[in-house]
Length: 41
Image (cartoon, rainbow, N blue to C red; front, top):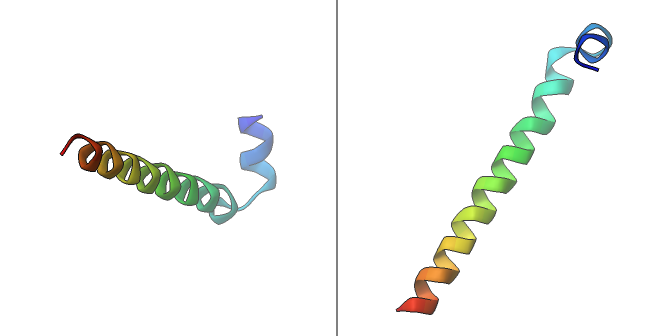
């Protein structure tokens, strides 16, 4: 999968979804932490 994907796709097509996914994960984690903290306080 890695070899085929790297050969067929330009780097931007591979890196962009990972950046979006990382942003969503970090944003979701921050939101979860804020909810937990406000719940405890």
